[in-house]
Length: 277
Image 1 (cartoon, rainbow, N blue to C red):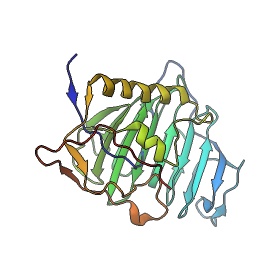
Image 2: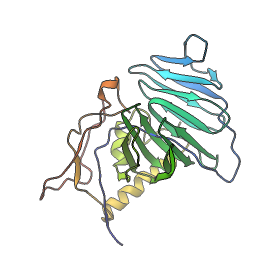
Image 3: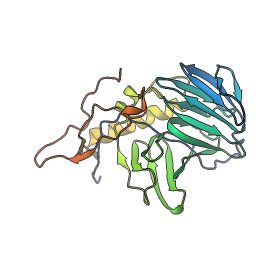
């Protein structure tokens, strides 16, 4: 089998989201239930004062949910689609379609299999998937990151629908907000990401696509073991910086620069990494 060298990047990063059509017609995202609240979470509606979010609360269009520093929230839709917001994040439920708007911060979205697709929009790009688990991170004027945990996702520029990239399980795209093109995906270490993330886990029965996540991790490990997924020639200059998924403030969401590995230097395919505190 042909070997494809790749980039295995020490990942502590954020995320993306879902949507394309399935064999059945899925209901629009016209309501959701807040199922978990950690610290400061607010519900925002036009012409109304912000309200403290509570577990069991139902939200309908047009409503935003926002988290503060060190805070997180979880929401579920009637079709079991799962959404989790990281710290300093805000998303808006507009209704009328299976689309969510990420205004800022980081979000995990998991669309169950055979439940139709979904889309998550930022000001500059839209991520669309079918029955997929993604993480997306967006900071206006800053970084956009999309990671596919399992399944497949298409990332498209809003101003040029002909500019797009397809990502599969274990791939990530990092780009600047407002960029005129989308770079090619890079491979990341799913096991390392799932150890450190506060929005998604390798072992969480509350996640509807848990088995698919396990399958994606196992497939990646098999490719690494067989030599079909090789350690690459790129490392992070500052792998200790966490981005988005575990951020408690907006001060640690700056992307560490990626630099070439010096000639003759070989990075291990999956170096060990302790979980994020």
